[in-house]
Length: 230
Image 1 (tube, helix red, strand yellow):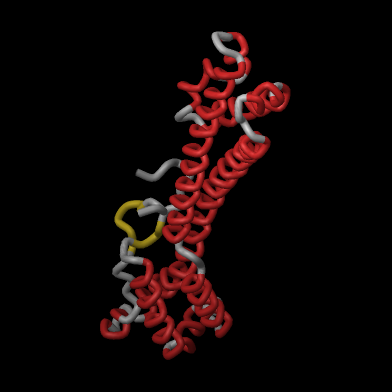
Image 2 (image 1 turned 30 degrees about the vertical axis):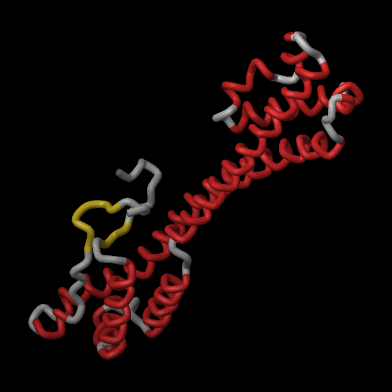
């Protein structure tokens, strides 16, 4: 179902079929352009030129469904970072346990008591990694004595940054995807609108000429608003 802010299509046929039908109608318009202009001066040569430009733009504007694939890739990237973050945190907790055995307070300083909640939360995992990295930097001498390397510590800090970046990119792309969807449908509607104008005029202009009138029948008006993502 469309939300109150969705841009809806003004036609019910597939986008490509609409554009092809509009190109066909545009050709008929050029054939009868003089009659249209005599009927209404707004139907001049510029109208035909602008209609064609709108169709060209509609043909070349990326469909939002292509962008949806990018969102899936972003989600996979975030999940990959999350898996590596979980492993890094568990590894660190192991070395903290060895460096500070039976020290619940020290383990809590590394965020161990928030780990279960953070496993499936990007924001909480990012906070945990940042907390753990700060604590591990402070205690690195003791951790290093038990085998926790400087490379592992650096990787922990990098993971916190990666998770922040991946999550930010995903959220930004979600917004861009919505904007792209609405823009795409708006462009399609604009191209279709020229045909709607020509069709409405043809009903009066060719009322007694059924064969010509049929050339300007739309046949693709939406009976009900169609969601942009449909």
